[in-house]
Length: 509
Image 1 (cartoon, rainbow, N blue to C red):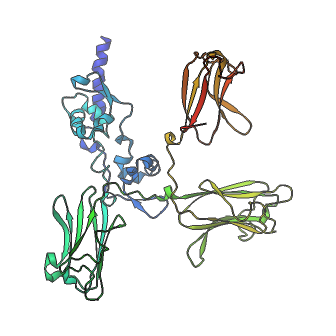
Image 2: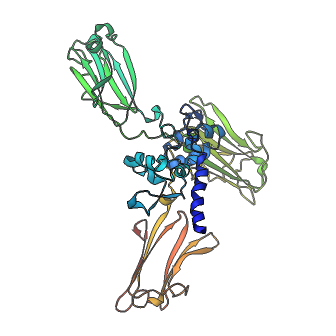
C-alpha cells in the first residue's frame, strides 16, 4: 500500500511543478534588437555574441549576465531557467528502449531526429511526462526561443563582399552581374547590358557595392565588356579596373581586373564562420609592476604614460611617489613591496618610468630595492637590472599580437604514463610519485604502490607482470617519480629482468 501511494503521488507533484510553465509566456526570449556596451571599449554586441564562441561563453555570461539590463534582454542566453538540468533523466517511451534512461541533451543530439523527439517527449500527449521534460529540459525542448536566443545577427553570419568598379573612357561598354549559381537568379546587376543605355556608367568613375551573402552558397560575380577589350581600351586612354573583396581579402578571377577581353568572373564561396575578433577584455595586455623600495623611499617615484600619436603627445595612466617628476602621490614606506596591475590596450605604446631624485637608483646603502615589469607574464627590462639605474630607467610596453587562448584544464594538464614491468622478485619493488610544494622541501604523495622500501604499503606486485599508470599533472609544478628496490639490484632480476619507463606528453623521460 505504501508503494502504491508513492507511485500515485509522484506524477501529481510533477504536474503541479510543470503547470506554471504551460503557457507560452514562460518561454525565454532574447531581444534581437538589444545591444550592450562592452566593458573596456565603445563597442556594442547583441545577445548572440555571449555564446558565439563556445570556449568563451561561460566567462562572457559570468561577466555580462550579472548586469540586470543584459540578463533581462538576453533571457534565453543568460537565465539558468534556459539550461537543461544536467542531473535529470527520463525513460524512453518506445518498447526497444523501455528500460533506458536518457538525459535532456538526447532530445536535440541528433539533428535529423530532434524535431520528432521534441514533438514526442516535450509536447506529445502520448508521453505522460512531457510537461515534466519542459521544466527540466527547457533548452532541449525549445522553451528558450531557438529562433531568437541562438540566432546570429545578419552581420555576424553573413559573408561580407565588396565590389569596386572603376570605369574607363568607354563606360557604355561595361556591365556586371552577381548571380546565385544554384538558384540561377541574379542578385544584382548594372550597366547597359542589363538596363539599356539609359543607366550607362559615368566615364572614369568609381562605383562601389557591398553585399551580405549567405554562407555555404556559391555565387559568381561577372564583369562584361561589349567591345572585347576589358577595362584597358586599345586606344591609349585612362584604363579602369574592378576588384572583389570577400571578408576583407581580395579574390580574383582569370585576370588582374583590367585586361580581360569580353568578360571575367570571380567565384565566391565561404562556408566556415568568420574568425571572431577578440573583445577588449579578452585582448587586453596584462601588465604587473612591482616596486620594492630601499631605505630612502622619499627619493622614488614612478609613472606609466601612453603615447597618443606621432607628435609626441602623451597622457598619464597612473603615477605615484613624491620624488621627481610628479612630486605628487603618497610617499612610499621604506623597504616595502608595492604592486600594480594594469590592463592596457593592444597596439598602443606605453612607457613605465621609475625615478630616483638623488641619482643612485634603488641600490640604497644597506637594503637595496628593485623594480620589475611583467608583460603577459614575461619580465621586460629597461636599460638596467631594476636596481642600479641612477636617476631613471624606462621600460617600453608594446604588444599587438593577440594573447594565445588559455587552454582548458584538460588541454593544459601534463599527460604522464608510467609503466612498470616487474622481475621475478616483485616483493622487492615499490614506487612513488610526489609533488614538491615549495622551496622548503615540503612535498606530498600523489600515488605510491608496492611493499618495498620506502612505503611498505600497497599491494605486492605479481612477478613478471606489466603495470601501467596514467596521470594528469599540473603545469609549472615539480614532480618526482621514484622506483625503489630494497635489495639494491634494481629490476635486473636473474632470469627475467624487468624495467620501468616514464612518458611525459608522449616523450620518454
